[in-house]
Image: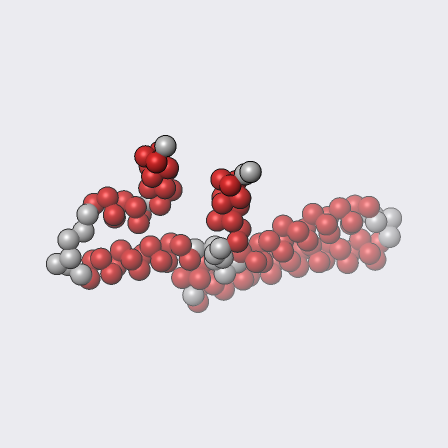
Length: 124
């Protein structure tokens, strides 16, 4: 019924992890509005409000520290898996200097969205 939308959703969420921080960013996306809303609702209870604000602040600080840690120690983990695979494919093509490389294949590796769009337009 909705094959294109299901395929796009599967590509966006299900198949690959974008980088090492993606799970932490999803956690922030879910927890931060919840903590902020609950802190606002329970603003009369000072202890609960302060606890929720500390959780809110601590999660943001933890995400920033994790980003800084990965940026300094292992920056390749901040690159998407798709980018890393495409970089490896291009480096393999460069190492095989005698192998004839079609420019269209390099364009497909570098810009897969355009390549997929072109294929779907050609098929129609």
